[in-house]
Length: 276
Ligand code: NDP
Image (cartoon, rainbow, N blue to C red; front, side, top):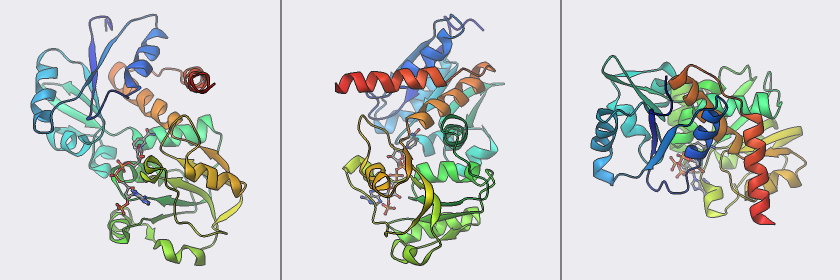
C-alpha cells in the first residue's frame, strides 16, 4: 500500500496531548515511508458521524481513545474476540464495506511486560487494581499469560465484582487485601495517578522481587511507582504499553510489525531532556 496517500487518525477528547501521530509516523519511517496521521477531537454528540465521514473520505484506519472506545465498539459490524471481551475498541478499519474493530491494549501491555521489560508472568500471582475501561481491555489477554492467579480489586468494589464474574477471576476488596498471600506483580489500571494519588494498598502485599506496572505514563514516576520503589519492587510506567498497542494497530492495518525498542528509548530520552 502507498502509505503516502493513506490516511490515519486518532479520535479522542481531549486529544491534543496524544503521542499516536508521532508513534505511527515513526513506525512508517522504518519503511522509509511517510504516513498521514491526524488527531480528531469530535464534539461529544458527533463521534459516530466523524468516524463515518473519515472512512467515507478515504480513511484507512483509526485509533480511538477516551471517552469513545465503547461507542466505537458499538459502531463496529465485525469485532475481534479481544474487542468482544473488552467491549471496547481502540482500532478501526474498513473491510468489505464493513467497519471492523479490535482492542490492542491488552496485547500492548503483555508485549511491554514480557518482551520489553523481560518480566516473567508464568506462575506469578498478579493483582490488578481498577475496574474501568482500561482494565476491561487488558484482562482477557492477561489471563492467557500463564499466571498462577489474577485477582482484581477496585475502590468501588461492585465494579471489580462485575469484571471478576465476567472473566471468571477472584475479586478482593481493598480492605481485605492484607489477608492475601503477597503478589508478585501489581498492575495499576486506575486513573488515581492522574490525580497525583497513590493507592490504598496494605504493607506486605508485595512478594520479594515483585514488579509493579502503572498503566499511566508521564515525565516523572507516578505516586504508585514511588510507593512500589520504596517497597523494593521493579517498576514501570505505561509508555511501553502505549507504543506496543500502537504497534499492534499498525500490524493490523499494514500487515507488518514495526520495531519498538529504539522508538521507546527515544521517547524516554526526549522526556528526560524536556525535564533537564
Ligand atoms: P476509567 O475512568 O474507566 O476508570 C477509572 C478507574 O480508576 C476506576 O476503577 C476508578 O475506581 C479508579 N480510580 C479513579 N480514581 C481513583 C483513586 N483516586 N483511587 C483509587 N481508584 C481510582 O478510566 P480507564 O480505565 O479508561 O483508564 C485508567 C488508566 O489507564 C488511565 O490512567 C489511563 O491513562 C490508563 N491507560 C493507559 C493506556 C496505555 O496505553 N498506557 C491505555 C488505556 C488506559 P472507581 O470504580 O471506584 O471509580
